[in-house]
Length: 259
Ligand SMILES: [Zn+2]
Image 1 (tube, helix red, strand yellow):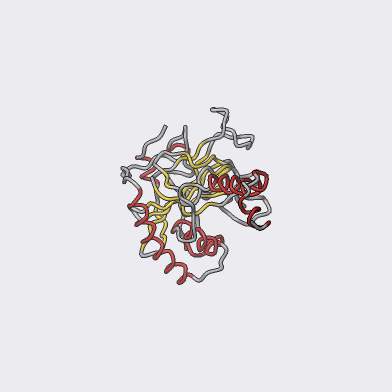
Image 2: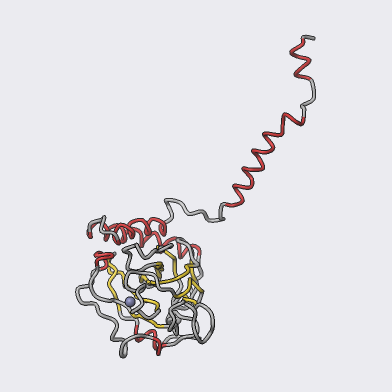
């Protein structure tokens, strides 16, 4: 028997396996950190998030943006209907926990102004195609003076989170601050929740009606200065052939459920 073959027959020294064992443990730990439904470039919600950032920042033409959103809506509807039990959505859930319609700014919904508004103008848009819903926060620390804690923002209808913005800083030009867009694939509507402090949801997540999605904050170019009372900006857009057109949710907010 040669020296080499004698070597081969020797039992494996456990010490020589240590590096392999270490790599395997690291790999297993890494795999455990991957969520069960990882977001990929093929996730239509994630794909919506990317062109939306380009719309917001004026980096995409209106025609291209509309075509892209139209395409993605078909995919969003498909993935939603495959994985979700369709919930009752005939009534809105008031989007601020502990508040009701009296917290809506303006007189009988006069805060809703859509003159010259175009979704595809992004951050440069005109008008105010939504409602500001104010909380009791005189000292502007984001803590509700009645409840003694931050106010939860809750999903008015079920849907898929298609875009969020996080970590807004006062140096940022983004008007919505920390915001969240949810698409309702059943009615082809987009719901926008802006000026949040915390955002609990992730892009691609399916939300149920009434589920907390964040807290009321003061983020955004016009929501941050002292002259602005702390509020949620809430807007609804009806997709018409890929074009999100604002609709006035005032009547639905009044008729909806709240607690
Ligand atoms: Zn507003």
